Length: 116
Image (tube, rainbow, N blue to C red; front, side, top):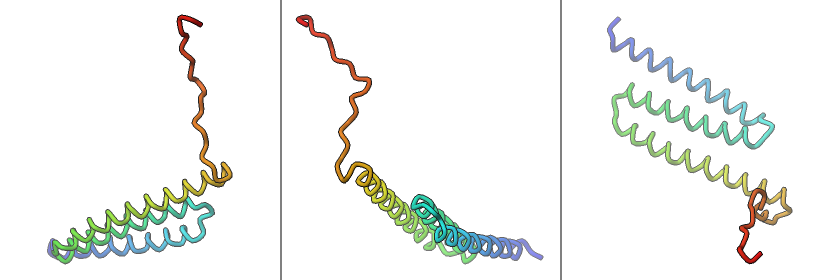
């Protein structure tokens, strides 16, 4: 067996393992009890897909696939950022009855003026 065929088997086995992991994480995202679990699973699926695209770029020897994986990285990051900001905004609105909380004044001391 040559080194090239050993690398091809390595790339193929890594892609299969990552594909199985994507399936497991997808199942976890469906049964996750909290929204934070689902957001985390979306982030993990994005990371695994990026790894799979990078492995495909190595296996095929195509450089443009690395560019696609970089674009997918930016899209995945923005998706998780938007989902997290919507969730945090939704959670804050539910706790305060839709109103923004006033900043806390704990720990702040008034400065004494010379006149009292």
